Amino acid sequence: MAELLDVGEAWGRIAAAVCALEAQDEPLAEAVGRVLAQDVRAPLDLPGFDRSAMDGWALRSADLAPAAPGRPVVLNFICASPS
Image 1 (cartoon, rainbow, N blue to C red):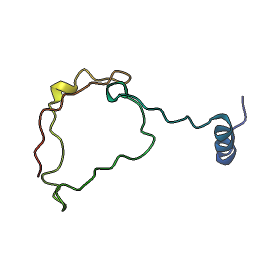
Image 2: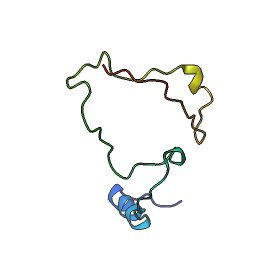
Image 3: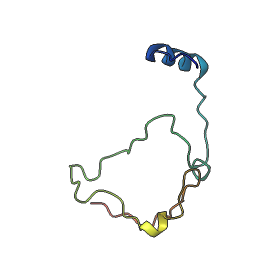
């Protein structure tokens, strides 16, 4: 049976075995399931104050039913309503 590694040595081996990937520009439709290279920030806060009772998204659970690991569901944006 293989000997267990301590946490520090395990992290060291992981760090030595991986490398960072370069950022790539992708069309939005082809970026589903990808990870952002940097944070996305809105140009302004809307509303300009906390109003969590009104913020968020509305989805129908039936639209998400076909989703599975490795098989994301693409949803259509219907409308926006500034709070």
